[in-house]
Image 1 (tube, rainbow, N blue to C red):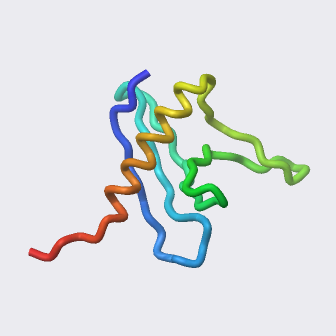
Image 2 (image 1 turned 90 degrees about the horizontal axis):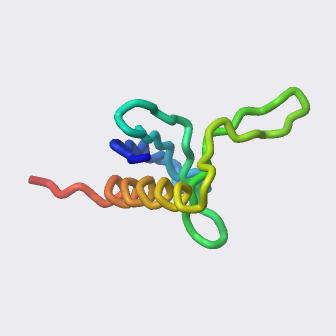
Length: 91
């Protein structure tokens, strides 16, 4: 699996724990949307897309199977968030 594209959509509400939404493309063939970047007690983390069932419980819709895949996705998304969150220079 290779992450071929990462897009981050930062949110402007500074008071929220939800900092941004993201999407990734795998092998130029599959896109996963609805990834969330959240500020937790230990810092930023990536939360995979979820859906709510009839009982009000949340279940991941897409998720990495291995620890290595999870780390690769988290690193790519957080790196893209860091790049998007930097203030833009005026020209």
